[in-house]
Amino acid sequence: MKSDLVKKGVERAPHRSLFKAMGYTDREIGRPIIGIANSSNSIIPGHVHLDKITDAVKAGIYMAGGTPVEFGVIGVCDGIAMNHEGMKYSLASRELIADSIEIMAVAHAFDALVLVPNCDKIVPGMLMAAARLDIPSIVISGGPMLAGYHPYNPGSGKIDLITVFESVGAVLSGRMNEQELSMIEDAACPTCGSCAGMFTANSMNCLTEAIGMGLPGNGTIPAVMSARLRLAKEAGFQIMTLLEKKITPRKILTEKAFRNALAVDMALGCSTNTVLHLAALANEARVGFNLNMVNETSKAVPHLCSLSPAGKHHLEDLDRAGGIQAVLNELSGANLIYDDCMTATGKSVKENIKYSKINDGNVIRSLSNPYHKEGGLAVLYGNLAPDGCVVKQSAVCEEMLRHEGPARVFDTEEAATEAIMAGKIEKGDVIVIRYEGPMGGPGMREMLTPTSAIAGMKLDAHVALLTDGRFSGGTRGAAIGHISPEAMQGGPIAAIKENDRIEIDIPGKTIILKVPDKEIEKRISGWVRPEPKISHGYMARYSRMVSSASEGAVTK
Image (cartoon, rainbow, N blue to C red; front, side):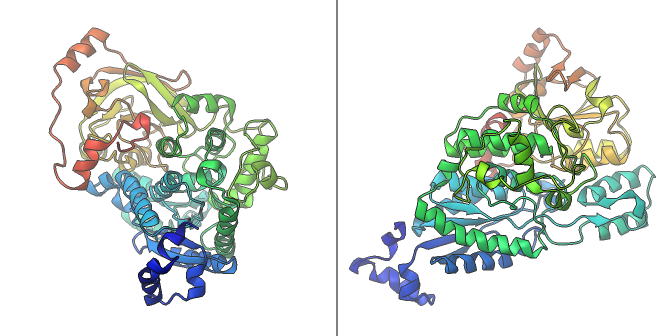
């Protein structure tokens, strides 16, 4: 066992003494030492219950003959960090999470890892650590929260956090009063868990299951269900099987597995952030990954689930309808996935999905009756984004799939938000928010506040928003992010001037700044890099080390 490095032999008597100081017996010390990375805290709604998940994991490990050793991991709530300086730290926390788990696992010679995340950057950060360390690992997430019910208009269906964000825009435009907003605020997030729609957290939890690193049900079983605790016990039990069989993350995270994840991504209509995180994970797993794979997969795999923010369904509906395994089974029938891939069950995808089926054809549509013929995401290229940019095309209204309009240029999210909320944006405008990329932000902030304001003001059918930053998984509308190269790197987005015409063709996968190439070159040649927005601390170091969004915004 790897843990023999800290417990076996005469020379390890001091080490054993330290274990005994914590109450471990010789019997426990002699067993495999299983690290549990617990990201529980009392600031993230999706993490307040993770101590219970971790306790269930410990029970499973003990039942299977291992010794669980728990340690803490940080996490950022993207909703609370939204639209202020705190959001700069969200994406950057992903690298810190991966690094800290690496440190803990190597320093203490863990034999295997159980990773307990739930929200936004914690999931990919933990997956990256697992791939980097390549010791037997399994992910058990905390599960999605239940959706809320509209407090004064019950016929309008369920609501969630995005309803609150968009209601702010409705108040500012006079379509809603503050009392109604307060009632929605109270009702939108009724339980613990990751926010109820197919936002980034749930997107990554679902893809963790699809790629094989989580047990069936990991992506969709609601946080408040007893089935979630049972799954956690099974994850604790199963890590001992993975250890026995020497099944490590890189045996699961193959190129085929990444293509499976992309296929499920397209079928579900996941967050645009998945592109960043899959690229970063592939980098750690030493698997080739590029943005062209997104369009290739999207062309082949239809959009089968219309989940919030694009549709009315939520994760609890997807779970009831058969979950990720039912989606995989539907795709397998048309040879759209590789069903021979190994998974955390110790079995292949084919074996896992054998008895799965679609229980509700409205929530998970068949391949013969999709919501859209193409998958949820698209990557656009052109003189404005030579290295690509990403849009959640399944959440774009028909009128905005093709659009041309004048640029309204802002160098910060705050400036753009102020203009939107002050009513200074007109129908047809193309809002450009730059210097918000991985390097320039720094940290590549999400733009949920401006996009929600646009939707709440009923401008999402008339206005596009482009940025070298990124978007929440809860964003809907013609929101095109990850423009690469970013402005801070001297990318073409830095050359845009007010009222330049921009042409967007999502079906054609192009985005064009309608300015002559020579003029763009002239503007770039005269461009002067601005001073960094943060000059000290973690984010200053991050800015110096981070790669382009097209490469997953990984640190080098």
